[in-house]
Image 1: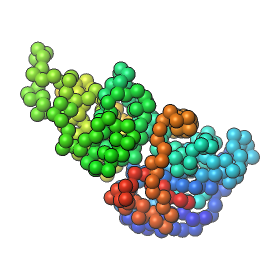
Image 2: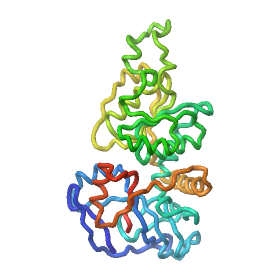
Image 3: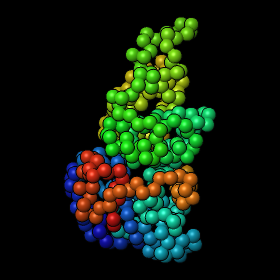
Image 4: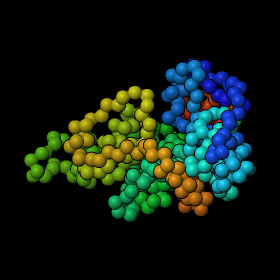
Length: 327
């Protein structure tokens, strides 16, 4: 079978490897698509020869182990594990989900959806109709906007540098879209707004609870995006960090975060079986139309186009939102 492996930074090649064997308790899945995750873009730019990527798969069961009763050959499936940009993968039944008949394969790439649902569960509103700001309107930010809408948030303010990202956010349900330089003063509780911090307990010169947002979600994965998101949080508000900051350390003004007594929430998920359960929940929400987040994977590539696909993701070429590689 074919598999994509890295030849070095920004350069991949396709090799032939044996189709994997399965145990009596596993599934062999013929991969249809592997979704492209931005968390792998930076590793692709600095890759060493032989490295492999890919963890967002959807496909068809090609063979079932003799002890597997939940699935049969021909089932469309998705889930966690097995990984990779290759034609066949091995999956564990308890981390595998059957794709509902009314969902397309490219809409059922469930691993990133489970990450989004996990993040959303860490960011419930305090009161129905609360406002929320989302910094970063790429694929994950758009998914979060649609989830926040389904959850009952009120005003959803989306902030992104790119005009096309802002337009996408509006289509997905954001009530207001802004470029960073367009943010009004009343949305930003930074030192300019605070002035000299008053620690006497006699009150504050400014309305530190009325400036900014009680809920802010960051999905940029960048230094300036994280800094901006922190400035948008009101006193005693909370910041959810969903961007994957894997290209180096980050520097933040923790004095500002300290003074605002804000909460920060790491919205990533490492409880594999919990996330496997969320995969099933995501597919149900999408299938029933409760979560309206389909039709977003808008670039499909061949295995030979893998490097071009990463470049398109990097540069947001041709309206790139989400890519998938046909295996």
